Image 1: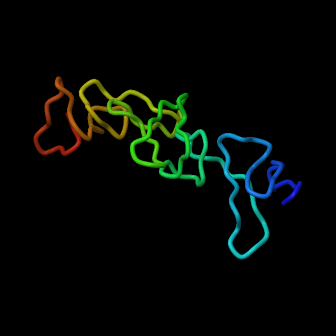
Image 2: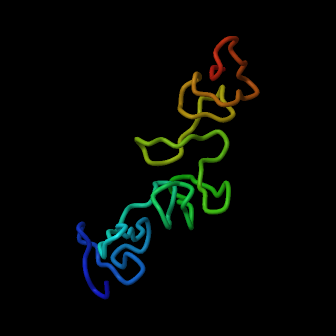
Length: 122
């Protein structure tokens, strides 16, 4: 790929997506000479794959932090919103959550009490 372009018009170099240094990685199609620049997960600023556990650098604008090596996630009290593409606040009843509502809590906050018979409600 000395100076060619992928199907989206990104310039490819031998080992990276030259047009956009950040937020894209070079994906090689197995068994072919073809490659495309593919977008990183929204939590990643730099990556080597499309998932949040394939980050090289976390996106500060998305609110992400390293949770494990190469893995970006939202800090406690925030969840990743697919719609917004960034970390957003949990309900004040939740310490950790998978969404914005009181019934999407992983753990209750100091002011949230666990609702009997409802595993994710506070």
